[in-house]
Length: 398
Image 1: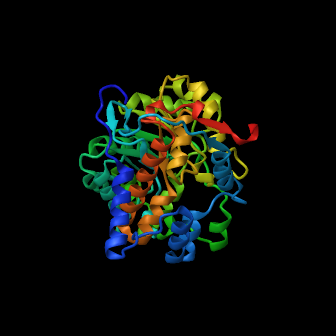
Image 2: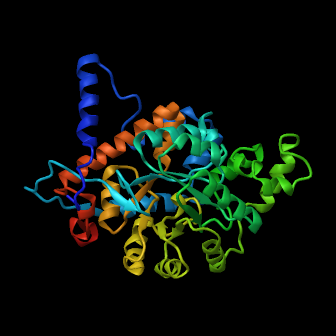
Image 3: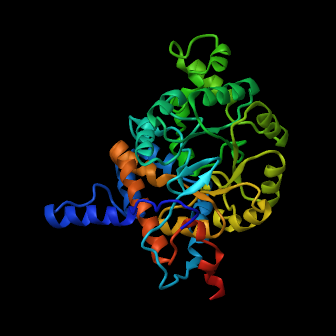
C-alpha cells in the first residue's frame, strides 16, 4: 500500500458479485454491453447518422484513431506472481486532492446530440462515483448548472481559447466562481480538424445552436451581440463561429492565463517532448498527452507512443495525464506504467450516455473501474503507485 492510506473499495469483486448474482438468481444480464466493441455498436445503432459520425469519427482516414489503439496494444503486460494483492489502492493525488481512482471523464462537448440530459447526466454519474468530470467549453449545458450537479465531486473546466481574450477571461472567472478546480487549456484545436464523416454528413452541431450554452450565457459574449440569443439564436451562432478557436494562440497566452487565474492550469494536447518542457517552463501545473482521440491530425503519432517521451521531458516536475484510445482497465494500467499519473476516459462513457443516460454513464464507469481493479491485482500490484515500466514489454522486442 502507499503511505498510510486505507485500501480502495474492491471495485472488481463488488461488480463481479453483483453481476453474477443477478444473472444466476434472477436471469438478469448487465444493462449495457460490457465490451467496448459491443457498446460502441449498440450506441451507433441508437444514434442517428449525424451524431454517430460526430462522436465516432476522426480526422481524415482515421489512421490516428487506429494508431491510438495499436500504440497501446503493442505494450504487453508481464504479470508478477505470489504478491499480496488482497487489498489494492487505486487512489492518486492531484492538486492537493486525493482521488479514489486514477480516472477522469474527458471533456467531450455537445452531449445533447446523444441524450437530452447531456452533461447534467454525466455530472450526476461522475459525482456518484467521485470521479472528476472535465467539462467542455462547448457543453450543451451552462457550466454553473453542471457544477450544481457535481456537488462536492471534483470538476475541471476545459477551455477552448477564443479569439476574444475578454471572453476567455470571462469563461475562467465563471469557472472559478462555479467551483471548478482546474482549467484545462486545449492546445490542439487552433483549427477544426478535417473530419471526413462530418463533411460527408455536412453536419456541424454548433450551427443548430447545440454546444453553445456557455457562450450564450456569458455576459461578455452577450455584450457583443445586437440581439439576445433567445430572440435570434442564429445571430449568436454566427458570433460563436467568429470567436471559436484561435489559430494565433501562442505560449504568451499561456503566460497570460497563468497571470489571471490561481487555479491549476493543465495543458491538453501535448505530444512532443519539447512542448511538454515548454509547458512546464511557462507555468503549467500538468499536461495531458492526447491527440484529441484522433480527431485533429490524420497520420499523427499514437498518444501512447508520445507518452514515455513526454514523461522523460517533464522529469517529474508536474503530473502527466493521458487520453486517446483508453477503452479498458488494461489500457489504464499500461498508461500508468508508462509514467502517466491518471487517464481520461472519453468515447466509452458517451456511448453509455447515448444508451441509458445517467445510468449508462454510471454503468460504463463501474465496469471500467472493476476491470482496472482486477487487472491491477492480477498483475501482482497492490497499488497504482507501484506501476512502472518493469511491468511491460514492447512486443517488437519479443
